[in-house]
Image 1 (cartoon, protein in one colour):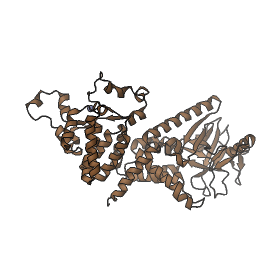
Image 2 (cartoon, helix red, strand yellow; image 1 turned 180 degrees about the horizontal axis):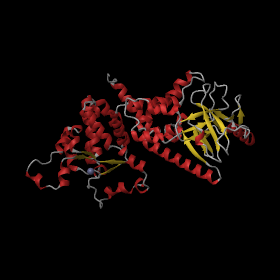
Image 3 (cartoon, helix red, strand yellow; image 1 turned 90 degrees about the vertical axis):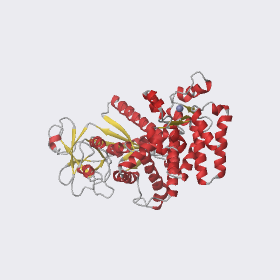
Image 4 (cartoon, helix red, strand yellow; image 1 turned 180 degrees about the vertical axis):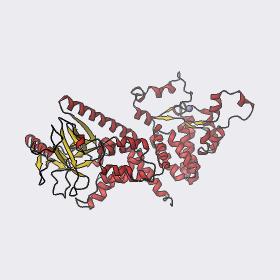
Length: 488
Ligand SMILES: [Zn+2]
């Protein structure tokens, strides 16, 4: 396949960065998931203490971390009731529980089932309705209607004077919270099993994830097909837990693609469509899953590389720049350099992990006494710290020529007198991030013919010596001297 034009790659990089800045980044995704999983546990425990035998789930983009402030995503709360036994055969009947048999008939809408009421004292179909939500059909079967949640929420709405909202299986008195009542089915129905048996060209989902997803089971939610004559007694299969498990396995890069799809859907595509034909987040998610299934494994290695960029402000990004530079992709290198320069403001502290920080030197231990370190705030640490840029021997092809010389520090007899650690160190090239940023700017702008940028890079590199504060954070002086000498 022909490579996309360079313009698209640069735009893609910028879009990815913009998404990261508005909350689609690994830190925010992690925080959101942790928060909502804690809310789930709190809601479940609180309900159990009040005597409800149920489990609360928070599904959807808020808990997945796949939303941005502009999308105005609501919170999807599913309350799964455990006092109900959902069966696919009478052999699964349990004494003393409310037993319902799943029935699939030709007239049932796709992914929809009827629930037939079975007696509590015997595995036989009930003959008489047991409550006001039981309906007897023309065949004499007692069916469990899906109208209870709607009935209760309307009562609450009338009693509290709050507006009533309904969308699909959700009935709520708060526009920002979708409330869904559900029953759990541990084994998967044929509709879901098809997904497991479909041939896939790629390497996703991996076997471990496949096994995990199989354990999720599915829900039955009170949602008849809008076009069905039996919509008040139909229950729809909902694989929400499977979806969430798959979404949790996605890399940040894939989540960014998904969010872009949703932004396009909400702001550009749906305004042109009528209500019934509108695209939903589920359509976008399905497209994402199909794309993930078709990806070669190498793309996931790319994702790992992307996630490693967030180690600190500069070091991993500068390695990416040198990779671009060594492959003559100067525009891409310049774009990342601009990004690093913008991130590297006066509050960023250089930190050397190679043992060159003097604990008795005020300037050296200052970075370790900042609020971010004391508060163990990982995001502040990531955004305010610049580690040394380190190349191992086998990374020589990604380093500019001047650093490759650093990897050959001895070729004579002296090698035999080094211990194992010294031998390893001698094959590395390590450079402070700030002077290296300027050095890479010099190389890149020179390659692009940008004279002003090139001169500014030389001045900035020189200032690393003239400015006491900058110079006090140079931990690899010899390498810095080599960079400076190469430019003069
Ligand atoms: Zn260092």
